[in-house]
Image 1: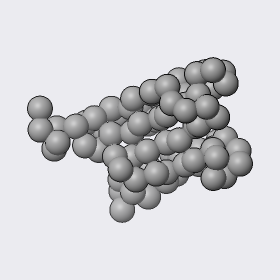
Image 2: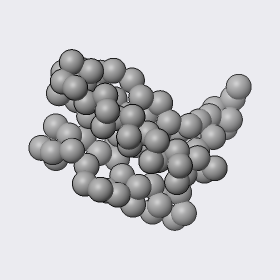
Image 3: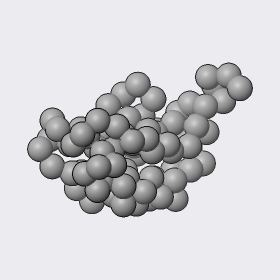
Length: 87
């Protein structure tokens, strides 16, 4: 499979120990439901460092819980994806 076959793709890195799994799963489902046709690489959720909840589109950071000091607001990630994918 070439890079063209797997891009764009969303990756959600989350802290399993912190109990962020449910949030990561919900966001992944919401993104796939709305953007699945535009994401050949799909959505991947991966356990990461403590306190992390980062959302990436390929190598572009869309949201960082550490930087923002909070979780993403409702539709915050989706609105960014609309701008990027349709832009």
